[in-house]
Amino acid sequence: MEKVSPTRMNLLIKKDQIAIASEGLELLRSKRESLVKEFFAIMDSVVSARDRLRKDMQEAVNKLTIAIGMDGKEKVASAAFACHRDILVDIVERNIWGTRFSEIEYKKVLRSPDVRGYGLVSTSTFIDDSAAAFEKAIDLILKMVSEENRLKILGEEIKKVTRRINALNEVIVPELKKQVRYIRTTLEEREREDLFRLKRLKKN
Image (tube, one colour):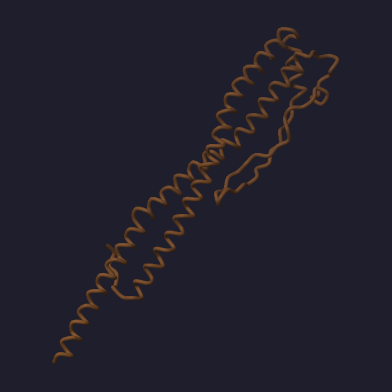
């Protein structure tokens, strides 16, 4: 136990510290509860998105195979070259219970065939279907990047908050309570001694 001077002032200080630590403990527990709720909500979304992405990518590859089979490699490659474009993204900072994380904001990747850059007359619906399937998969990938990043940061923050809760609950508050008991016991002993001395003085 940390050495503490057994005075009434220190007793009041230690009681105040216990009250502050207890309030902090409640706040940290509320924070952890909110973070855990958010964590599991995002986890469900990430797991679902991963399953969806596997299906979407398989579907996109199948459609590309059909397009190559029906229109030939050169035509598909030419349409792919005409489709080429940059995807602009913005990194935006969000905040949950003081926990900061970055999210990607972007315009929807999936487009209608008339704005893809290739001639609609010279291409088939198989190429359109293939392009749409890959754009849909890219939309989902960009969404998943944000969610998986948030999931990782929330997981780390939950660990930090749990460590703080354990430190307060198992070390700091019990130590403060021990000090309060020590000060009280010492003060009570002093009072008894003083009372005993007073009685002796009165007798004398």
